[in-house]
Length: 77
Image (cartoon, rainbow, N blue to C red; front, side):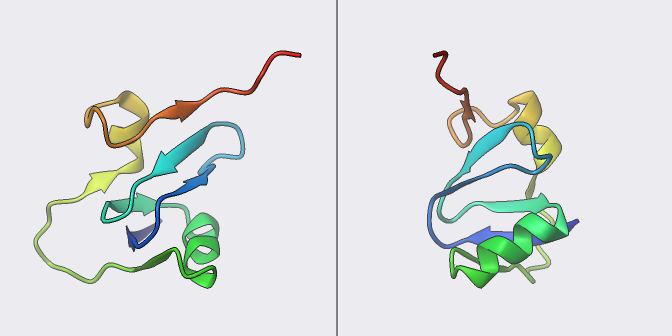
């Protein structure tokens, strides 16, 4: 897991199944491969703050921070 700060609002899948929207300015702890992908595209940077106030992937999935993330569902065809 890696703690990053989003620079640009982007979509990503931390588990290869569910897709989430990560908001610009948000600090999240996500799997290394997704964090590396966001950082390589310039959409995120490593967060090194020590304030301890951060949102985790688990809180996003459980919806503890309403309005900061939303689950994206595929179209039925």
